[in-house]
Length: 206
Image (cartoon, rainbow, N blue to C red; front, side, top):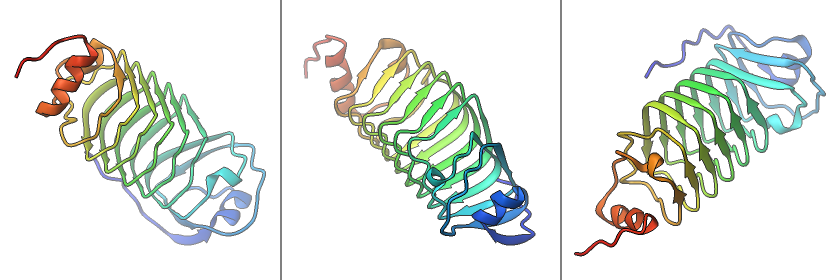
């Protein structure tokens, strides 16, 4: 996985960043205030800290070579976008829609992604560590070098995904719904294998 390439020149707050349309090579921090920013924003080579993006009416958010910490993206739309070489740490992303989105070289750690929707995505070199996906949906995902570590997929829906060789063995997959394609060649532990077999009406004798 390629790491973000960041050359930070100065630190500013989010209000100044949006007002002055500055989105490159910056450390951008939180500040109280609301800006009705209607344009599309591409953050390039930035570090973003403790920003509640739900307060800013940005049409499209896009990230390349960014480190994003303790930010809130809840219920935002990430549709037909590309994210490259980014790290999302301790972010709140409840109900986010990732639709027709391409993600490559992305690292998520301790992020809350409950009730999110992943559809028609391309995942390349993606790692999720200790992320909560409870009640999320994964439809029509193409993946290459996808890794999950200690994630919670309780009550998730998995349909028509390419998850071959993806390891779910240390994650929670209780009460998921899925189809055969999505679990073909996945790696699971013994208890998970029995649970998945039950979903497919297979009787396992032990």
